[in-house]
Amino acid sequence: LHHQHFHHQQRHSSRWCRSFCHAAREFCKFLA
Image (tube, rainbow, N blue to C red; front, top):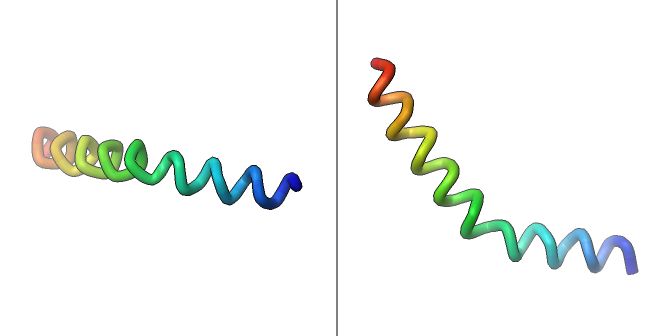
């Protein structure tokens, strides 16, 4: 049950992770 819940959380946060990675790239370009 715990493992299934964790897997669901990962799948749910994939969109957030993509947007976070995009923001990190933009931030790195800003710092460069």
